[in-house]
Image (cartoon, rainbow, N blue to C red):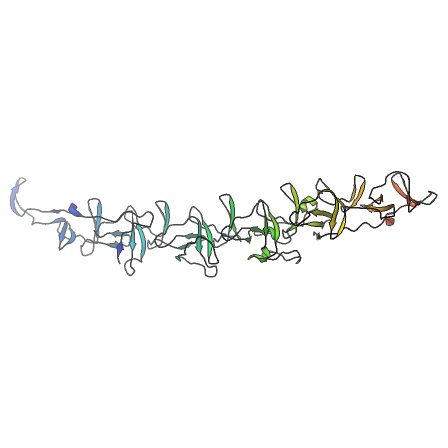
Amino acid sequence: MTMKKYNRLLPALGAALLFTLGSAFSAQAADIGWGGGGGGWGFKNPRVDIGWVSEDGVWRYKDSSGNYVTNAWKASGDSLFYLGSDGKMAVSQWIDDESYVNENGAMVKNSWIHVTETGGQKPAGWYYVDSKGKLEKDGWETLGNYKYSFDSEGKMRTGWFFDGDDIYYLGGEDQGYAKTGWQCLDFDEEDKPEDGDISESRSSASDSSKWFYFQSNGKAKRAKDKTYAAETINDKKYYFDEDGVMAQVGSAGEEEAEAGDTTGISRFVYLGGDNDGTMARDTWLELTDHPASSEDKDAITEGDSDEMPEDGDSNWYYFESDGTPAYLNAKASTMSRATAKIGGNSYFFNPYGVRQTGMIRIVNASGEEMVGYFGTSDSDGKMVTGKKSGLSVDGDTGTYYFSDSGSDKGAGLSGTKDGYLYYQGRLVEAEDGSDFQVFEVKNKLYLVNESGKVQTDSKNYKVDGNYMYKISGGTIYYIDDDKNVEGKVEASDASTLPEVIFDKEYVLN
């Protein structure tokens, strides 16, 4: 096993390990024989060398009895040296599997040690000894500005490290510190990495590389008890799966759909491309992909096949501030609840979140009908309010009135406005040549002319030149040619209301 100094790539590595015993080693001697002094004569001990001695280029240490010290540390100056079982000073080796002495025999402290060959005391790799010369083992240590993990033998971990529910990436063999921030790494979802596997870093994602986000503590942001985990990074929201992979494009970010969501679309967020991942919020997007074709397509309920978009279809979506697509909620009871207000305008979206245009009919859970018109083209989609003349629906042209205020704003009016009668927004007119007709709207009878004007004057009215109707006290009566009342007009006598044509119809349950 060989060791070498490391002073180029690894952060926190100290300078080259250079120690020397030098002249710090000393020998002591004593005189031999009889002699006086100290108050009398006596026989001194034979000469004994005490302390460090060099024999045949090998350093040893003798105690006061002249014996070689073995299996012990001895100091010289500021350094410690280890004497082996044969009394020889150890060099370039591990001591008791926790300390290391360099090529000069001195204990190494606060330094990195690189084992370059296998088959020795320790596997090849990097090791670190602390200020006491003890090997860091089985845990984390912050050295300089970096965080390192060491196994039970003290070897610095590299590559992927899975610690319980936590995921770390520690870089290559000459790095070993916990990565932080965004990292694009080789990652095969069919053959996921294991402890110690090293992945190449990439500049962009592909089929074989993915983006990960490692927090300041080195832990990858990942889902633990949900399908996805959300993280706000630099004011942008991202989602990560259980492997820590940044979710892409359409993903089921929420575990359950919102109440009133009949398709599951509220579970989804839009996360941009392979190298973006930013959740779309407060924005319009024209997309040719859809959750029904995503990896999480099982989260979408296939209802009306004609309504559910397919990949390749170009559709407009709006993503709310929380990232949820705007959609038609089955609990909508009014037009304002059935639509989404965006930038001062209201828009209509189907249960799959696709913006719709044209005439829309909605029947709420109470059986109440609502009609609205949205946009004049696929590039518009804004709710129409107020009076709209010459509105064409499937080739049928007419005049309409849509409420311009309140919870029913945008809903086609059934009743009167400015003296004219409307049904589901469409102007109700007497047939050409009929002069006047009676219509029932919302359980009330109205007498209208060919322009749709509601008649309210208490007088007699002719149809085709003959007297037919009389209004008295707000009630409509039949009269003969002599203007005699023949009876009250009943609801069963009312003319058929004009047919209102719709581009799309939605019945909410």
